[in-house]
Length: 79
Picture 1 (tube, rainbow, N blue to C red):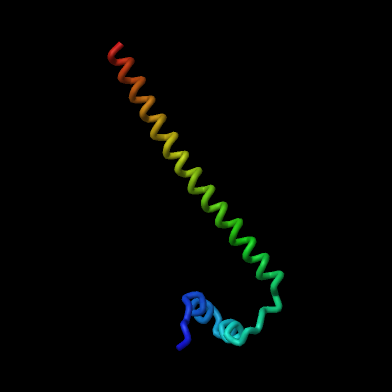
Picture 2 (cartoon, rainbow, N blue to C red; picture 1 turned 120 degrees about the vertical axis):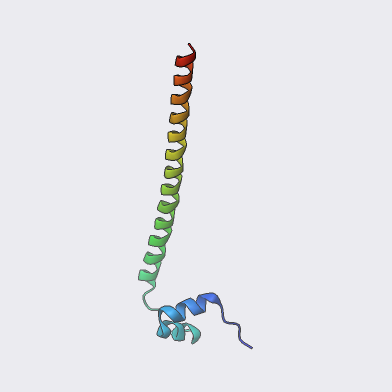
């Protein structure tokens, strides 16, 4: 009994011919383009992580500014 992997299903859904070639052990002739696409996806993934960290830093700084403003108003009102 042959096990079908999720990546095979993804390949089949994307392109049946690519799945067939892969199942026959035939390698793609456009390895340079595939490597370029992989590098692009890795770079994009890093950019997504960086943007998430920058967004988090923005929220932290906003909350800190609001807290400092509230503390300043409270000290001014008490003083």
